[in-house]
Image 1 (cartoon, rainbow, N blue to C red):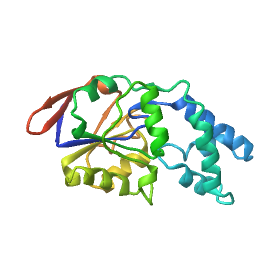
Image 2 (cartoon, one colour; image 1 turned 120 degrees about the vertical axis):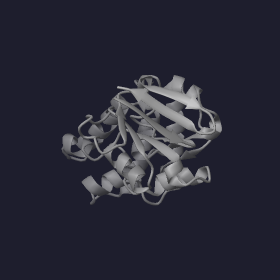
Image 3 (cartoon, rainbow, N blue to C red; image 1 turned 60 degrees about the vertical axis):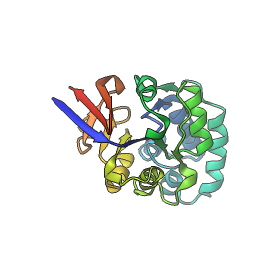
Length: 216
């Protein structure tokens, strides 16, 4: 099936979308769950695509979420081993001008920049992080702020996401979504505009607008 999407700017989630830090993230949260006497599998159902403070509020509302997040972030900064770029991400980003793309992530800015650098990906000129929003994904605030970085209407952008909460966030903002199957199956992501396994599936034409296309 052939498809194409036009846009003026691209908004990329980070974890599971530009970098695969699954070993780091899952190990971090599973260790935390055990320390807190919680079911690690239950906790992991709420981790992907959310800010840590919102995950903790969901799974352990009795804890001081801000204090727990501070401890988790300190641990995460020390445990980036195993973090790698998603297949084709480096080559795809290399086609773009720095003013054509941004990172829109649920991670804090410092962690996001550290992971991108560790995976060998470029430092984004524009980034919306957990530090920049009052309501995390699936609320649309992050992606609305991402479009605003370029002074564009949301419909002029395309979002790349892997988590269901991220897809919902972008769609609530009015932004078409290309979803990657890093965290969920194609069936689970079927409500996204398009679903890909990685960036090798894509072709990019850059003119007055960018045209993303694929043959699948």
